[in-house]
Length: 232
Image (cartoon, rainbow, N blue to C red):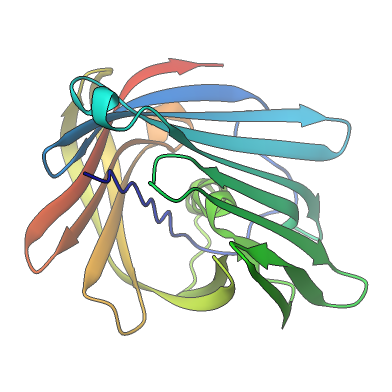
């Protein structure tokens, strides 16, 4: 049985001139994907002007016997003209029966992103608002903290650009996760022409780091992650 763990973190694009999210932090989430259990860890670090963000997903419990691999995503970016500008993106997916790899280089001097996904090479035109998909979480955190709103954006997912639409935002008086109870801002969004709705619960008290992540389709929850540990 294959354990498929796909995380779509969707966000707003523009940010203010200063970076207010913690320069470095790590967060751990317990994951539920239908009947499968997992663990998601994220880490943001900085060296000079270059930031690095990493997400690692692993199966846990009985599902670890079935699928002992992991999904590793890494992306680097800089902050220029108040925008998070992706430099590189890497994917190593060993959870599937057929492992997948991907690499993308964002060339801002020529305004294109090129690389490969599995055995397919690609080269796509980009504009100043194009991001890799895992940097999206950081952008939404920063944009929401600065109260800057956008209705849609594009993101590189696999070997194509996808149009993401913000569909709903609501205030949650109290959200209970293993890490504690917090007020949260729930932002929901979806890819154009998709039935899947992705939601992030951002906790202002925690620098807008998500305490909960979900994906629903036709009213059913396919994926849920809850914060269990946070370190600055």
